[in-house]
Every structure is written in C-alpha cells, then in structure tokens.
Image (cartoon, rainbow, N blue to C red; front, side, top):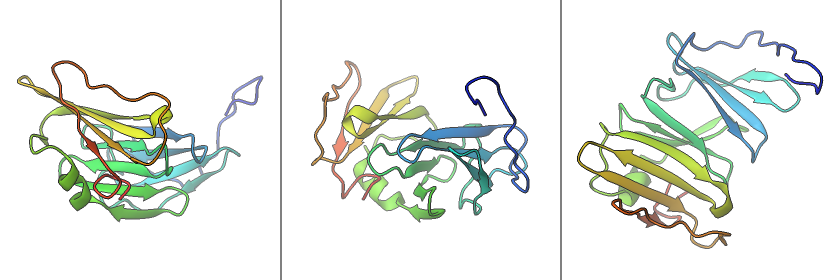
Length: 178
C-alpha cells in the first residue's frame, strides 16, 4: 500500500486463493479491488478496501482464473462486476460489497449475437463516460463487437461501431444489468 512516501505490505491473514493465473480488478464505483482466482484456488477471491483491509469472500460459482477461463469487469453504472465463464458459457453479476452472485446467463444469451463464439479470443472493458460494457471478440474469420448499456442514461460521448465489425446494443432488460 502506498502512503504517499513509501510502500507497505497489506496483511492478508486468513485470505487464500491460487498461486498464479490470479487477477485483480479495480472498481471505482465502490473504490475496491477484487482479487483472487488462480491455480489451486480458482473459485476463491477477496476484496481489498481503500482502508487497506482485505476480506475473504465466499467461493464463486465458476472458475475465476486469468488463464482465459473467465472475463471480469465492473459495470460503471451499478458497480456490480460482470463475469463470463467462457468454459461453461455462463454469466453472472457479482456484488462485491454484499458478496452475492446472481446468474444472468439467459439475459445475456438473449441480448448477444447468434454469432458469439465461446472459442474466440475476446475481451471486455467498461466505458465509464457512457455507462456501457464493450465486449470485443475476434477469430481468424471475423470480429464481433457488442455493447450492453442502460438506454435511459445520458452519454457524454456516443459509441461508434468500428469498420469491419458489427455493434449491437441491448437495453437494460436484455443486458447484464437486467
């Protein structure tokens, strides 16, 4: 932890997760870092709060490792994390404050393109200014871009589809925020 002059180690007594293929995802909505996963503990995670405390969380319903089996990001509107389990094609929201998982697989499948592939290389990133989650997927043959957004929220800058790709927006009932 940086105190403005030097680094100090954050105590993590009683907190366990894997040894490598771990992750850390900052959430500016709640000012926390969600960390964990990894080989040997891929459903384990913890939360690092701004005051430096680290708390073990309940086991996740899916693997969280950073080895390509899951994608994780925060929703810039709700502060919930959105988690895709690529090896199971299951989707969840995770409330890191309440330590509660909610499966949203049916809503995501209804909102995404029929061309979405579980085997593609993909990534997700929040676009805070617009309150959207951008999912990008690529294979040797094509690219796919999907935006999930809350239609009623104002956007400082409207997202624009890239040439050669497609974009598709899903309103709240169909997207991850359901």
